[in-house]
Image 1: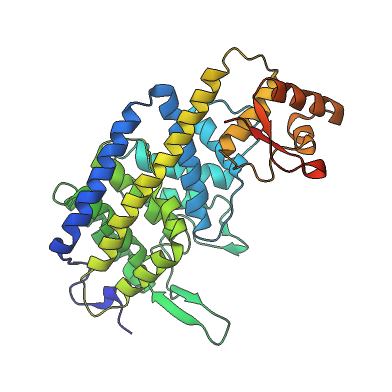
Image 2: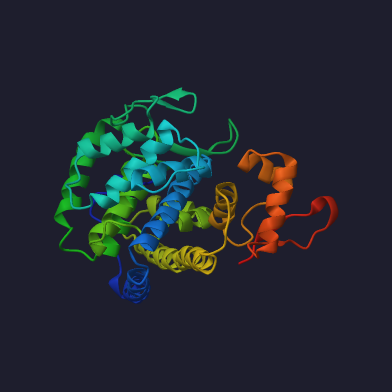
Length: 370
């Protein structure tokens, strides 16, 4: 088996421009349309959209690696880092805070130089306890000499999907990567550079864990440099999560090769970018729908408990609050008695804030009257 990093020309890669130009044009068109729509959001709604997309990015970039984060903890951390209200969101965790700090640093500080120290700092932020799960890892350091393989299947019948360069080669590989990152910043189309950076970094796999998350943060940084915008309004990680099997398949295919041509990977990446941009329209539409809702009900009298519950439903989106709002859930969220919960839900129904879902009897539940 030959891996791309074993080829003589590595780390120089090639691609077929004729195949990529139409895809690049389509991605650029979608990008321009989105940024034009974002300008119409205004400052406050822009912050709300940023918070929604950053929350989604954090949850999905972890989910790709099989780690499930608590949405409320992530949203709490995002709100605190962006200076938004945190009432009712609860606490976050050190690891969630670390991830949010990495994602924000990659985009807000996109003009800063990318250095080995920055990458190692990101890695340390992702693993504040020095452990990945139950395993102690080298935090904030390049990996050691042990082989780094991506493996699946039961013991004795493992399938090796990828093997990274030997640990002793990592310092030199990363020196070349950082030199390449700075060298091509003004010479290569920004979207192509983002795709190349992603592939290059995961091929070197410089850390014991967290390589995928850092690769996606680097991709966000490259996109921010391309757009000259320190705010992300689309989540590439969310789209990669939707297409996770294909993502891993195309990475494996492009890594196990006898050629340094990575046209297939770049074609998939550009398509994925376009789909991520198209997907963000849904998130921005959700932000606008929330704003329209509160504008419509600006004069509707509600107590703070009712506002808190309604905001939770709005954050979940249309039909996004699993199982709908029930009296029992209201009791838990508002910390009130069952009688008070029933009365306050009834008031919200009378005022047209809530509507009853179709199910009756014990299954009765409610949603926002969008």
